Image (tube, rainbow, N blue to C red):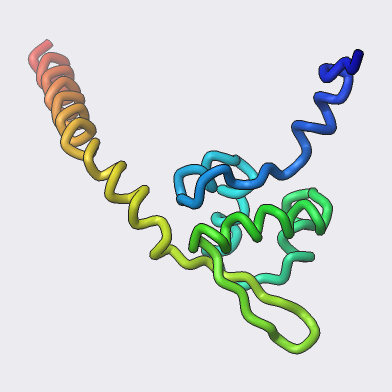
Length: 126
């Protein structure tokens, strides 16, 4: 019988393929979010991304493929290398979904601000 737990370290390090073709699934993987964060500064080759994130080039390529397939990353040929860049338009569904919670957060921050103001006023009155 195969002891899958014996190989947990190997499984955890493997890039998982997207099970759906949406941005939510793609950004669920922390290393893909790290790649997107690096690409905010501009286009980069896969070797730079892999080195910066401490992963192998094939693993970085798998993550980039998933991000490209869901429309979060674009690529272009530049001489002998391929440059990858952020395509933030693909994050629109995530932005719209998170935006639905904006009213909640604004209300929470407004209540926090009112509480802080009350504390300041109480200190001044002492």
